[in-house]
Length: 275
Image (cartoon, rainbow, N blue to C red; front, top):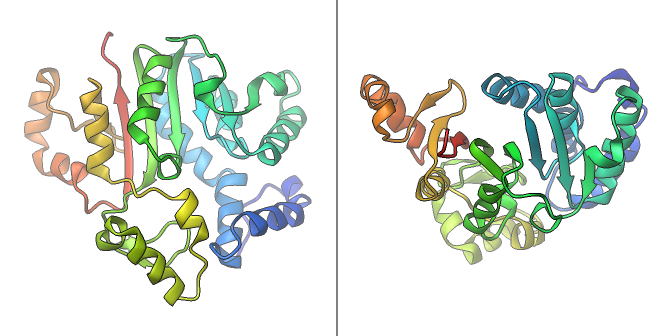
């Protein structure tokens, strides 16, 4: 596989591969680790995430990337003019993110931009962010509704939430084990564990770290919180709000597809009331 890592990051690749191999032992294949490295340590996913978020935010918007991983999105967002910061539980990944930021943006205070911890416990001022991003995070959270309520408290009126995560009600390859998956497995965790074992895979990561989110579930939580929900790309409304009614009626089939549990991924933006 041709690497998508910037040249200077290739020197870090052996240590990163060793870290990811330990983290995802029995879960990721060697090929999947390399793909993850390119997409999430490199800028493959970050460039997409900035493209679908930054144009919809005010200049110098305050953005919290919750579960920021190695910091690629935060770095690209800051390069795009956003005041982005990142929170991550994994200390190794935060140290990497800080080191890269110091190298590429010495004008930034890396210790303030990237912090280790749980965003709900770090004392952020309520209503202080223009946006919170959850890129491939919700599938690792037991109580998604509680997390999104916490995120809601951090947002200003009119603030936005950006979400990407696997839709576990779809028929697709599981996003971590990369084996065929369907909704029946998502609804019966015991069956899912037995299935992974039958393929010679270690189910420990699934048992402790994967929670099967669905497209309809996430949309429903946000709408219950009063958010207007949009498809991420192309950006179009999928919540039945009066102000969007004409657009929704004109694009009804596309709206239904965007809300469907057949979609492989949850990819949405949601706008808080008040603006």
